[in-house]
Length: 401
Image (cartoon, rainbow, N blue to C red; front, top):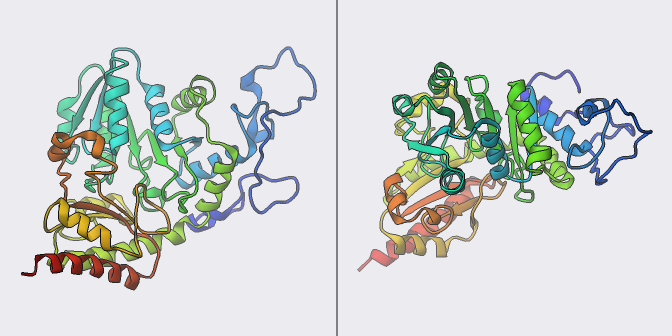
């Protein structure tokens, strides 16, 4: 590894001294590795990937190991782990902490897949007690604490309402109650937010999103400074769950990480300009983006983040039919789930990502039929605005007598 200390430099560094002098992490596809001989004294724990020792692909892989070092470094953490998906990473983090009879507190405005996992797997099937709170107020988290609380699971900013929680304040609550704080940092990325430095115990990512950045690889990651938690995560990843990231996706992730700083700056520049444009438009009633002074948590965002990233949500004037007219008209943007790619993606949460929550739960969270979430890409902002104008023109035409 080179001696660079700043984010963009560290992002392009190689984390292994490849024998052939590769400047790009090679894809190691071997499922098993030749052993020099048998050693009655050796255990699996003795195999050291840092020393170039590998035994079996589920346990470790050179491509995956290199990107795990890269992930840890960019989050300013000690130990990183790469998984087959973001959901796999979050599930592994939870399994690494909770024991029978434990209580979990989670932000109520989580990504729908995470919330369903907590409700349908950990609560309904495995019997854990799960409480969802509006964590915008740390006091709500403190009030929900019980003697059995072992894990606080936060996401900030949240999906899709772009709510924030005070990581530092909630980390103090966790520490005072011997609980672990996990933070999903997918929206902010380590470029704009460092939860470990703010007191979190473990950070999670869907690397499918900004870290990969090109919508061509699925994955997840965990980073922690806690050696005991790292040991439990590693056991669950390699032995208990076997949900590690495949070599090719690890290669794609490594490639994406190298340009993350450049991409995140352009994502934010485009998103800020688009948020201001939407905030002044007659066809829009509300814009949710922490870079706007109108966002109720803009002060917190400026305190714990170094930027506001590339996702915003907004409310169209009208109902589901207005949303349909708008979405049927766009040309440059893509109607699709996911986020964080170089291309702009438009999501209608009520019928797409958050449809499984049901109408009642969506209403409780403020997810209306007219809410759209935009993952703003790196295209020319003028073309994106032109696309919005096409959509808004369709709305205005429909309401003209």
